[in-house]
Image 1: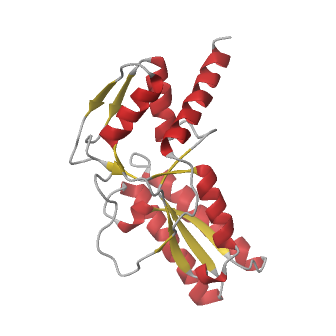
Image 2 (image 1 turned 120 degrees about the horizontal axis):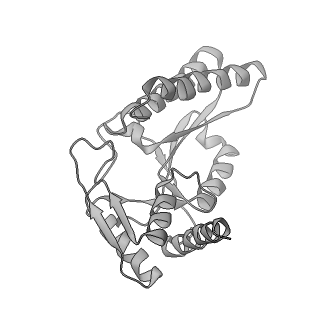
Length: 218
């Protein structure tokens, strides 16, 4: 997204407008928009900007046409069958094939990963709950973890030494401790009653990536 601003805007902004138009024409009860925690801060480059614009579109369609909406601001998602650009997928594949990974931030960077199964369950629940109508909802994990601790955990799961090359940069589009900056529109944060533990989730991802690598080598 950082290097393809036009494409980012076409896909996210124009694409969301087309979906909102269809929802309006079909008299959809509520429009769910998948956003990101990055909209609350000053990181994320054109991706953040496109999502901020889409959130404004949802609110304006409600004001102008009465289309009910819920904005879902997802945290760091991971799980089986990810897109190949997913961060956790990249970590698993790199460590399983080379034993090394280049991380373009600090070992002190903090993340709250949430498994896609937990995120999907909460999304379905929110969609059917009227208290979340016309609101922004934050869906993220409950296990705050520094990335240095994250990589130590992965190393212990793998049972072998790995090398992580940290490259902090002031120009990075990613946040260090928190994605948030001051804003008036504070989202509702979801408290997960149950969730997949990060160590179990990562082990499952490693197994999935290893299975994929084995199939390619057959």
